[in-house]
Length: 352
Image (cartoon, rainbow, N blue to C red; front, side):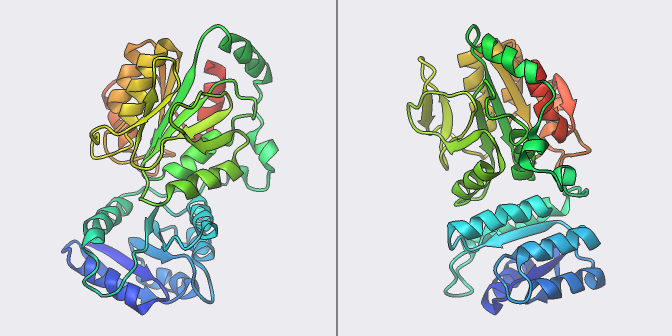
């Protein structure tokens, strides 16, 4: 049984989650808390396998509660946000940085019957979260400024890479799923602002959270982070995300192409679709990176990159929240390098 603690100051919403989760025979509701402080106190007593955590609550908010729980008794936490404004979405990603493993949208509820769209997705996310391997959040950069945390020893490599970029076209493509926002932040925030190669990124994320993710990463990273536009020309030192529910590829002149294809492995945007497009357009100039996540999306993409002469990096098991996609890539012989997430950016710099 997966024991779940529901944390929300809204009785209506707690009732909704209880009704949804009780419909699955593998899930047991062990408690409900009305604020973060109650949640912190109940974790030691109830020892839940998964916690659903609201953001805006009295007494103690969801981010503070997440930090406290991760210090006292690390537990998979799913952040629930109503997406009221940009400020709250930024808070959601700060909660992920604090140790939460996933984020879902709180639906607009008018009656307990208005949950059908949410039911399957919420139960799936609860079960994925229950299998997440927790480790101390990446406090690698705790107490250090962004500049110092992002500093890379290979300054000469940056200069050399800039010169090389005039002769050979290169691109970095990165894919992630569960646990990905923090992993992506760890990689991108370690790149210098004059990084001489553009990056494309696909993150499997709940509908409505892409803008917040990009805005949060933009504040965390020294390179530019943005949502790509149709026919936009690639620029070095910029990380591009495809718009929500769209795939990203390239026109023959290598400008960005935004389009809809069939979902791959149930995902659109798809990591594999992005990587295959990059391999076709840039050949041996592609470095593919596959980070933490559930499923197989990205595995065939890495294979395509290797077949085109490019190189591939996969996040290791020790630092992956979910060692699904990375393991599939390793088992499929699609990984040139298997690295801890905090060493990937440095290795990219050396490869470039």
